[in-house]
Length: 400
Ligand code: ATP
Ligand code: MG
Image (cartoon, rainbow, N blue to C red):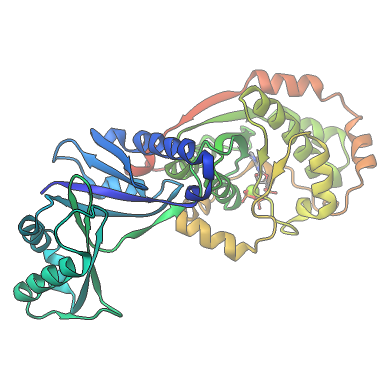
């Protein structure tokens, strides 16, 4: 039986004249995300995108799983393609939905007839298909208000579709329609969630990670890479820029007051990130900060951090509780990796009593105790690029 996946477009339907551009980006994103699975025909007709495999050996379960993570999709469903002929629709409905009908107790049929020339009207289609289902599955009863199973028949211009319930899509707007931004990614719980949330609003991502070998290990970097691969199933492929941070941290430790160590380190992170972001076409930075979570996330500390760069800094988690962040992290699949016990550069040289209300004037004075410019330049010259491929998110994860 010929199968397809029907996709209902989400919020982009509201975008007036931009709608066509948004839809084109969505189709491109779908194509990119599923191409390793085989060849597909992708059509966009009457506000529904259909994704039909060109051969029957394509794994449709994995195709659907990948589509379920693409932003800009409100709902999707696997469907069987039938002719615009009631006999063909009946035979295929019984065969295609056999297992689901077998396991249900109640059902109803819905029909959508966009081809108004089709000889039967929607209520007639429902009653004929309902009748044939009852004949073949005598244990079922019809329940139009609260059915366990809804069978939908869509009669379109060139064919009909038979399907069960639609599945809720990832929502949001297509990645790439909102510009590009750089996520400062650690191995923690928060920053992968922040990355996911901004990608959901259409932002294409670049990632920046600060590593401080030998204080931080190769496995800690591998963990960050795995986290980004999970995020990339939603956001698409990206580059991760790994910045060597050891010398800078050691220099701050030697030259600046201990209680300002973290805030100075964070300001230098922002300065370096801005330079990398600009070079790579990004117009904003993203962090996983949440107000009041730690000493460096008070209003005063955030004000000092913000002053270090001129770019807008998006902090999508700013008003969220940790348990709300954890819920999203579990939903998107990053939580189990985030809690693996590896060190982050932020946990190296942590002061015992960090200043929770740093004053910018004193922070700047402390920074003047050393000329960081050449160290920043050196760090940028030695940045390593790691390619993050969304396809790895669907493979068996490598041990970290
Ligand atoms: P996370 O769970 O994202 O690590 P956190 O609550 O542990 O966040 P911090 O360690 O203070 O908080 O980090 C705040 C933010 O700074 C992170 O969300 C992230 O955006 C950025 N950040 C922290 N460590 C790094 C790093 N090694 N490389 C890049 N960005 C980092
Ligand atoms: Mg952290």
